[in-house]
Length: 172
Image (cartoon, rainbow, N blue to C red; front, top):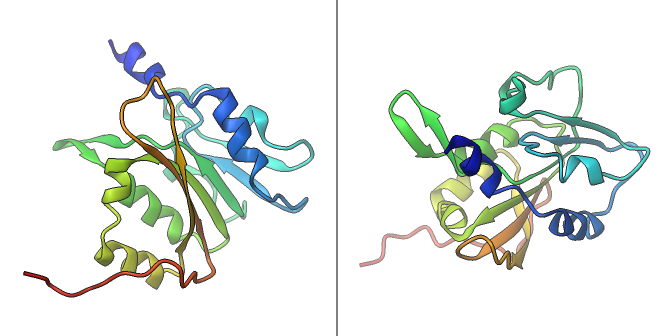
């Protein structure tokens, strides 16, 4: 059963190629695919650009990567929406984004997520990300027939985008 679950959310190669075709790459970029799965993003990263991958199934945890010495500039991934913890499974989407927000060499992140994960980016959480100098730059809606629900590519970057704003009041 674990194997079926693991392969269920592998990003289709055609979607990876479409996402990558809409990203501007520079020759000095250093790319990371932290949840590589079957390498559908990683194998389609542009030629000539330095790239890295981690995958827990291969014993390579994204939290153990050498971010101090390898200055990643872009993260492109379809992360797991739930991670196992000592207290059971939890939605880890925000925690994953916040982890990468603290790595200042990362200037852009392209994260594929479902509508539930996108909904976890509350105004309070977005304020925390903004305080780390990470902002939503663009949202792209995606339809993947084999997955249920709506999916989005969230492009985060270090430049403030005034098109995305948050009301912080308590409304009754």
